[in-house]
Length: 307
Image (cartoon, rainbow, N blue to C red):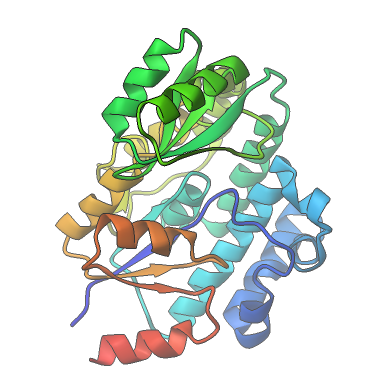
């Protein structure tokens, strides 16, 4: 019998039409969009399905859309009788993981993601991010320190797939240093702020208050946290992780390996994305993955679990 884990994608996976196929084919998924519209008192369904792209790309909208599409995918998964025994999420997807494990209700998750997006959208400190391919995390960290600016490894997406985040001059310096050090590629990302870096600190005090006010329960099953790469020890641990995540890194390599250590042998990417599936295959090639981005995913999942 397979041990099923679920993972939720984060910002950057938004696209016009996200979640539409699932919503049409699943009453449970459709109900999630209804709940999002009601709780947030806005047309989240329309935002996901029709955009337009410039509106959907705004941080305060992208986070709400991604969270809702992810939650709809989880609802469709459970509607088919597939219950995960572990959850994790990439950046904003971590909120979905906490909902999946019962730490947060769907309604509270929606309120939190709306607040998170709003606060991050208000950041005025100039900053940017860049993807560095072909260097190990420790090497990239050393280059950040050499840059002379505030810039840090923000997303450890693979053994040699690191996203740095920080001051524009710092990111520019790391890009140059990385290529000189033998990196295969250094690519600037299209982002509004330096996410998961110290430059997000101005949003932390209000976000901390929002998180402190949310009702959180003990997790029903393990949730692997971004900033630690380890399983949450309880609701308080999860609460602190949500706060730390704003300025701290996403340790995705450690997250995936922690899931394998928990016995997971089949991982479902619950959302309209296949980004995390590709990352997992680079980290743990023997871990089977199914991305719900593919309309045939649920049928394939039934086959894999039956086998």
